[in-house]
Image (cartoon, rainbow, N blue to C red; front, side):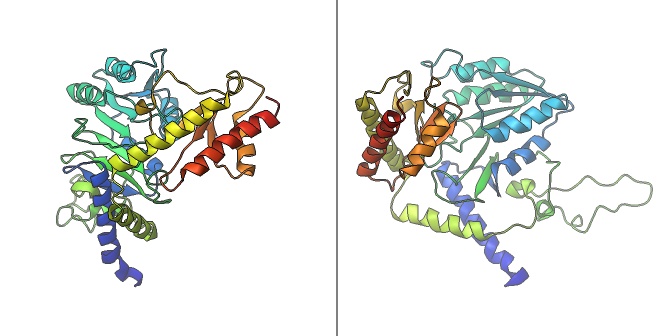
Length: 363
């Protein structure tokens, strides 16, 4: 189809947008699609009024995408305030949100926070209060929902996040593969990203698509932006990933794999993994798990902590991989992420492998 493919590709993209909107329980927002959350967060940051409001508020537990971009902005003189995501108040579900609220002032351009922390799966409560605090001073709120969608229900209106920006993707729990990320923007969004592509002119005011010429002696007209999701659009992209996303989203709907059902499955699997691990009776100074917060307050993976030097998280992951058990690690934390297609016997075998590895290493 060569260049004739775009009408078909755009129709598929619209179906993918509708799928993300359903997962967000969001009837009003606009869904921007992107190849990665990095691409979308960078566009969001480029649209903020950082000259007038040179302050960004976040936590010390954000994923590398947000962390690195903010680190670089801090080098350029932007004030980046990081509140503790733990701070010794692990049992206080909304403590992180309260610290964010207190850090917001009238110099704040945006607050950036995860709905589920990527290192230890803790759910961040009280995001509605963070949204209200941001709105009071005219700041934007960006919620990273990557570790929510597909693992537990996430409702934009249910959390009163109608004016918030929400970013996420389908590489993990949604099983969409690479190239399927999104940025939810409010319906009345007027931000003008500096990192903008020519697709963002589609549907803009008549007469602007051909350029920004103006009569001699007058200033050039402002760069035009389309309305809705196209405001954050980029440029020519590979649409193949959207066909895969559409197929998977249709499969999930046909099988009635709703967020609520997926959460029930996930919690059952996490409880089985946790009970199996506890039954191993391993030395907690070698390998342990945090029991201070119930699994219902965590997202879709179980975290094991390697607190000492007798065993390394990376070494444990490698040894498990050799036994056919796929895990990953963040610093001293090992993450076990069950999926709906994993059966109970596989979970039990994985726990047994953990015990075998720890004992074989003499730890």
